[in-house]
Length: 461
Ligand SMILES: [Zn+2]
Image (cartoon, rainbow, N blue to C red; front, side, top):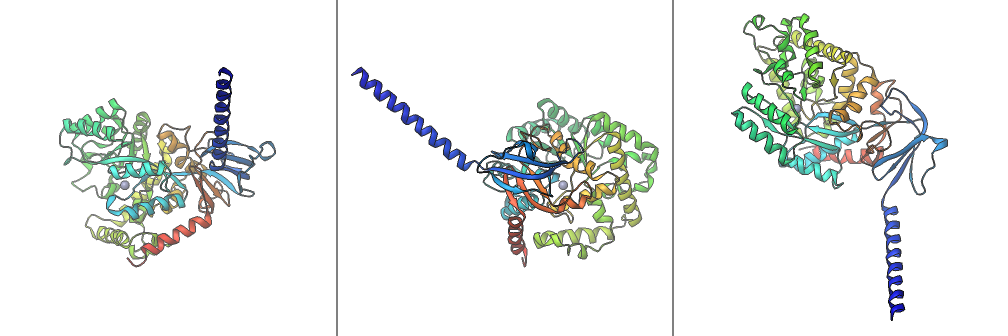
C-alpha cells in the first residue's frame, strides 16, 4: 500500500512536470521575440551612432544589444531588416490632447495618429476619467496607442474658488488616478494652497500660469511644467510700461515692450526652480505665419482630422487676425522671441521637453511633432539636442529614465526605425520604416493601411 502511494505520488509529480513544460512551451510561442538586425542605433543617452548592431526585444522590452558579431539571435525571433537604417527611441508628445468620451472613435483615431508618427508617449494635458480608461486599455494591449500620462480636469477659479476647494481637488484627483494637475486660472491664495497640497502628496502640476501668480510666483511654487512659455513675456514687461495694453495671445499684445535686460533673470529663476518648459512653438508660429487658414487646412495630414475640427481652426485664426489687438509685426516678434528663449534656456541647462499641443490649432496629432521638431531646430538647437527633448528628457520629466527614452537593455520597446539618419537632418524622423510600441511592431505598410482607414472615416463628414 505504501509503495502504491509512492508510485501515485511520483506519477502526480511527473504529470505536473509535463504540464509545466507544456505551459512553458506555450509561453515561448506566444511571447514574441524581435530582432532589429544590423541596424545603426541612436541610443540617445549620448551623441553616438552604434553601427551594425543587433537589438533584441523580448516580452515588450529591449533585452540585449551589441555589435552584430557578438549577439546570438534567439531561435524563432521575428527578424526586422536594419541594414542601412537607424533605430531611435520613440518620441514623447508632452503637450497632447486625447478627445473625450463624446468622441470615442475620434479619440481612438488620435491615439493611432500619434503612434503612426513615432509618438509612443503622450502627456494628455486635460481630461476626465475617460482618458484614464484609455490609459488602462492601452496599457493592457487592448487598444493601439502611446503610453498615456493623464492630466486632471482644468483647475479654474470657477470650479475651485477657495484654498479649501483646491486642497480637496488635489487630493481627489490624485486618488482618482490622474498623473498630474492641469493648471488654468486660480486666485493667488488658491494657487498657493494647490501647490502646497500637490507637493505634500507628490502630485505634479503644470500647464498655464494664472495672471496674478505670474512667472515668478509659479517658479517660486515650483510648478512642475510651464506650457507654451506662458507668462514669460509678461515677466519681461515692467508693469509701468504696459500702458493699459492687453497681453494678447501669450503676450503678443505687449511683446514690443519687453525689457531685454530681464531675460537672464527669467532664465536664472527657471533654472533655480528646476521647472520644465514645454515650448509648443507651433501655436504662435501658426498664428504668425502669413499663410491663409484656408490654405493651412490643405496640408496633407489634415485629411485625418474631422471637418468640424478643421473649421474650428480656420475660424479661430480668421477671427484672431481681425482683432484690434492683433499686430502682425508683434506676432512675428513673438515668434523670434520664443526661438531665442528656447535657445537661451537650453544653453543655460534648463529643463525642456518636446510638445506641440495637438490636436489644437493646425496641429494634427503625431504629424505636428515633426513640425515642432523643425521649429526647435530653427531656434538654434542641433537635431540631436532637439531629439533629446523628445526622448531622454521626457523620461526624466516622469522620473522614469529606466523605463523609456533611450535604447538600453530593460527599456520598454518603444522604437522608431528610420531609413535615414535623423541627426544629420531632423526631417529624416519622418523617413520611417516602422514603429514599435511596447513591443508591438507596426511596419510602414500596416501604418499606411490604418491611416487610409482614418482618412476614409473623415472624408465627407
Ligand atoms: Zn493644450
